Every structure is written in C-alpha cells, then in structure tokens.
Length: 105
Image (tube, rainbow, N blue to C red; front, side):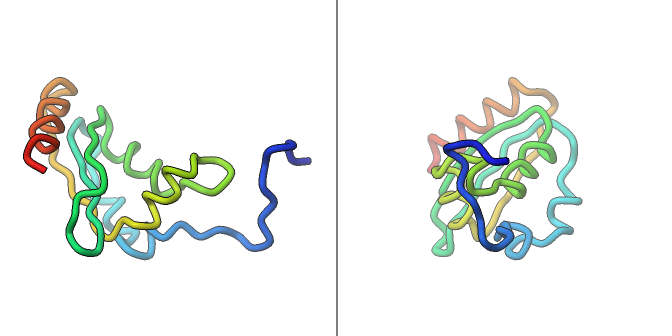
C-alpha cells in the first residue's frame, strides 16, 4: 500500500547514471573521503560535493528514484553526463578541496 503523497509508477524507473557512467565507474570509486563534481553535456559544472565515503555518496545518486528522492536531485541526475572525484586523507581535507573547486568554478 502506498502513502497519500507517493507517486505510482507504471513502469520501473531506470536511473540514467548507470547508463551514462557505467557500472564499472561506481565500482572504481574508493570508500575513502574526497570531493566530487558532476558535469553537464557541455562541460559545465552542475554540482560539487564532498563525502567521508565517496563510493557510498556517489552510489546514492545512482539509486535516486522519483518518489524517494527530491525533484531537485532527480533533475540533477538527469543532467549528469560525467562525474569526477579526488580522494583526500580525511573529511576536513575533502571539504577544503570542495571549497577550492567551488571557488574555481
């Protein structure tokens, strides 16, 4: 039984990140702290973030589905064409790298 605010889907919703980036990309992401950013088709930066566990954080976007994630995240995921990441020794260093990338872009 679904809740009052939950949208019913006629077809299973496939996340485009697995198709665009490939399963191998997600398996290659380390379980370490670091920063990441998503790029659009024209190479523009869509989002910059940091995490204590890059694999877990990037996989959360991979499994974002309508009704479970916000519309903002669903729109973001639909626009992502490329994702890059860089590991850091710890979370404060990852946040510092994230801030540097934000200032650069």
